[in-house]
Image (cartoon, rainbow, N blue to C red):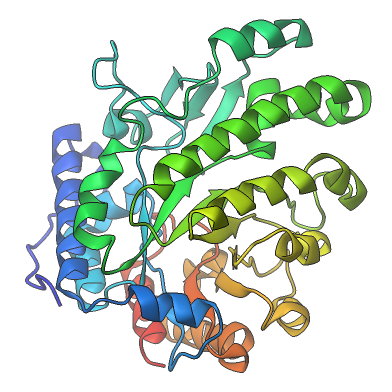
Length: 394
């Protein structure tokens, strides 16, 4: 199954001390090896789709490659060995890092993925949003918001709003899709489609107040964001992807960020339009929303979600969600990333098996095994190995 011969990594005590050029070599080699293993694997596109639509599968599916760049740099070939031995059933394909945004090849001051996301950094993306990345943090977060006042909205929509059809916007994804798209179940990724983009543009405090004080402006901006996302779907729809992976985190640890009633009033019909566009292109809708979202799951299914991700343990009672919605939607995620760091390898395997028994086996294995969030570099390699092995010991 692809190249399984490992090159020994030096893996210094502080992998962040590596030169950026060395980090880039490690990540590039990782991607090349994992893609080669995918290419050497049997075609699975139709089988995966049938499994997700509850047409029968002899095992649950896998999407283990949910590693941050830090994890890949830290473990390099050892991590690639795992994914070469056990290739994922579902392949995520990105055109660019969401926090950097699309950068045309001729952009002056072009941002480097490695320099930006492996060091302390602050930058502005194509939306005018300022992002900050902190070492040992949880990734990049928006800290500067371009629409400080609603009086700026007309100018922003006319002059700053990105063009989803910009030449080359998804060009970086095309070589991978040319190799794998017709054979493997590939998922095109679009992050922060509505709510998360809204508060990145306005700031969280302003956004939560805006629902009560500036409904016309909120709707104008959401209209524009919806048109933008639908344009991106049209670009991805022309390719051989099998599904769109769309993200909007709605849940805190114990509730929605806004009331379910307000969610229905402002956002439900936008999602219906967006998901209908995905289906118009013959693709599945894989929707990612972290946190406690149980109150809106019925309506997410109603408006067109085919696969619900990431099924976070803790915020969600997985057994109760499965009991109510198993057989109505496919599940993805569910493996508690917060336990991967402190469990023993055997405890990790036991956790994976319990999750399969809750989310997969009772519902025809219509379940993609994956971590419930991005895996961080503090997770020991032996626990990552235990997770991957358990997923393939069904």
